Length: 554
Image (cartoon, rainbow, N blue to C red; front, side):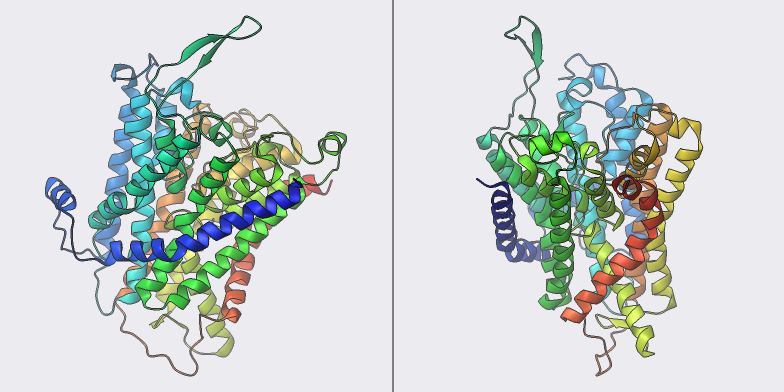
């Protein structure tokens, strides 16, 4: 089949599956986050942790719960790795080194899943299942819980209550993430992914050498890895490994899992604010950027500049032949737009402009559709900025979903927008200035070497987790710095999101008038898309000019 036609059919099937899931999954998540009824198992968990399931929290109390839960999670996962050699199913692996254990704990708790290790030769089965996979559920649920609190800020009036973090966290894990993960893990097993507790088996190859073939609970981790936009693979090769991603069917299924919750949350948003059209507006902007990104990366990777690419018919270096260009670029666009970081091809081998588009996807804040929860609250903050800018143009106080956007709200929105670029650009600049950074494992020099460092900080600060992989990040310097980058990149924006939610919830509703900006029209879709490009994208343009653009235009 013609590769272009194959790519089009894959994209069409993916869009169709996402469209069919949008309404039922979005409505179910809205019901989950608004229902007053608690399941019996949920009541048992509340009793165990000492929480009143019917009580609510202020934004500050909600934030403290998020930070406390995440802090304890980091400590638990760090200790779990350090004690690995004493645990069941350790497979004989030693304890993880302090620096790597710190980096990995920060990574999985922040939904980044950056991996500076090879999973099959570093982590035992119990650590993979009871440590890493558990955090893949928990960190995804934290993101959805925070966006639920923000939505309640829009829907509630003259109150300081935004819901209960512990209730939201428990419900999201038990009612949404766990059932879907179990179902799709079974589908992945049927598709050829492995699921066992075996040790590695040693086989003799045809030329007489010996080869170790690892086993493990792969399919169960693969399902939540993608569904929760986590990205941490069981194997070092991630979704390029045939045990994780055996064939084109499972490849398309994994891309679907990357995107489905992020897109469906727009329906949840519309349902909770009482206007499904608001959800359609947001999902339209997300879809626009996703389609544009997938098309651009596919275009760049199909260019035939260079002898090797002309012979192969495309830029096939670092890509799985069983997926080809369409299956690889569709995956690459989706994973860098969703803060997942899961990969089925080597991003460092992409063309300069193709790899540059992947970096730009993360720099946009991964809002198309973004991580579970984090993508939606990111684009809602940008929607607030869009309404404010429009209000300035016509000389009236801006209003969004019946709430006035004053100086206080805009300060929180501005701080949210500035936080991640500051972390990325300052971190990259310091890394290039210090020998421990640019001299600590960079495999390339010039624009491509700069792109590798820029990608690393962009991925860590935006909680993506993928990498160009041209730099060695196993030194204590990189482990420590990127661990801190992940933590600041995850939790500082949450502070401003929850503060914004609290400020909005305390207001009384403002009735719509003839002068109120309509936020469900194609005009607003265009305005919001422009704000994403200008306010967020152009912030990074000088850095992109020094790296992928300089390399691509050379």
